[in-house]
Amino acid sequence: MRTTTAHRTVILVAAGALGLGGVAIAAPALAGAGPFDRPAATATPGSGGDGGMGHGTRNGATSPMGPGAMARGGGCAGSSVTAQQGTLTDAQKSTLAAMAQEEKLAHDLYAAFGTTYDLVVFDHIANSEAQHLAMVRTLLQRYGVVDPTAGTTDGTFSDPAVQATYDTLLAEGSTSQTAALGVGKKVEQTDIADLKAALTGLSAPDVTQLYTNLLAASER
Image (cartoon, rainbow, N blue to C red):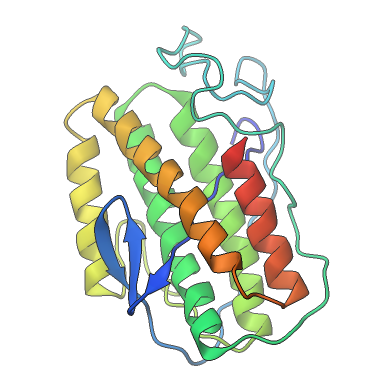
């Protein structure tokens, strides 16, 4: 990753489904735990390291994305969770588990688009999503919640509904670079609403810190 960026894809659990761009994603079941780690990335010249990811292609040309488009702050908003552990309801644990699916879905989409289109923005956000997934996995382990993404490869998901959502969005974004950016915009817009909903009624300090940091990143 050319610069550490912050991107958020979280979910709203409603009647057992998660919203992402109008496509329903079923919430995963609960159980064990899933550790994960991801090294922090370093910035390189010409990578849009000014914090706005709206500039730059891999060959150094200017991206068609304008300043601030899908922009992120100059670093991942809270690269670790430092607040103390609290208590989660079963529904809040389901949300946390579903967040892992969402982070992986977003990462895999951006990674796939990054191999297709010559825009560093996709590489930036894919790496940011990997960092976010690492933080979610840390909390899954802390609260004894199964990691539904454990053991899966890029583009594959344990939940058929999540798999279908990924396939739909990948196909949509694979038609053109503009369409891929549109998929990213769709994910971003959903993130903000979903995170705000996930914070409602939440009291656990560490999970609140994570969601708040990710929300701030998406709003930037």
